[in-house]
Image (tube, rainbow, N blue to C red; front, top):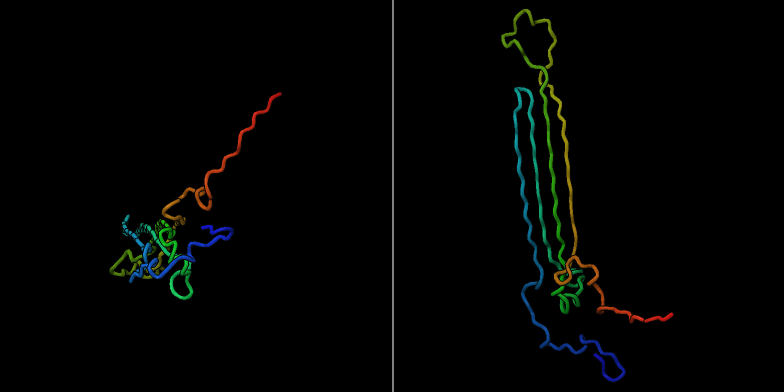
Length: 164
């Protein structure tokens, strides 16, 4: 606002009646979804395969700088309708292959097998994992349109005709 030659900030004209006191933080919230699944397969008597997957989706609208003494009170007072939202997706998959070695072929322990060396309770495991995370932050007004942030309007240049 301009008064004569002096520019006066709109915030300087705020009064106690200009402010609404809430018992909650306006334009803040968080929503999260977590899914987990696991499948176990016994392929043979000595071979197991286990596949596990998780998915997480989060949308967290927050006040930059937080609340309270260490926060940014001017943002929460005058700009909470533009609180940004952190969006995040995470995918994770794990596959585990286990092979048990050895064993006792002769449960009775016959004399023919008495001098043989056998392996018991030994196994090896192969495990593979994959994870991907996608995160971004945007405000509700501009979203992903980067050219709308911080512009004061449409800029046009005059077109000049040149004659030869």
